Length: 122
Image 1 (cartoon, rainbow, N blue to C red):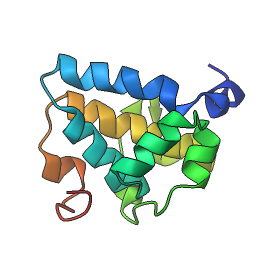
Image 2 (image 1 turned 30 degrees about the vertical axis):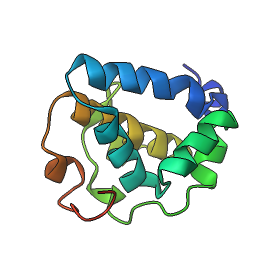
Image 3 (image 1 turned 180 degrees about the vertical axis):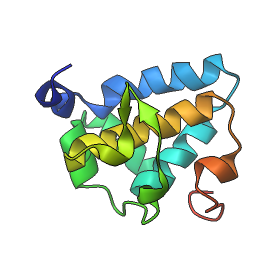
């Protein structure tokens, strides 16, 4: 999928897919929201607002209240690409989010997913 098309996707369009993915693996939307909060600094109301406003991914990340300073600890492969090697900052943020959601769905421990930062997004 071309990067421009991904940028224009709304958070509201992908959030239900994330919910389905984690629930299929017996994880909760609370777990999903916790990692999204950890990554972006949005709180529950903020996530609800960007969903209701159908904010695109570019705006979602541009207006994120506080990107987590430990995002550099998010490593690994998503969609065949190492997330730490992605040069486009927005695409890297999107892939960080995908990677965290995958880790939730795979049943990883929350302390591992949050890179040991258990107090943030709790």
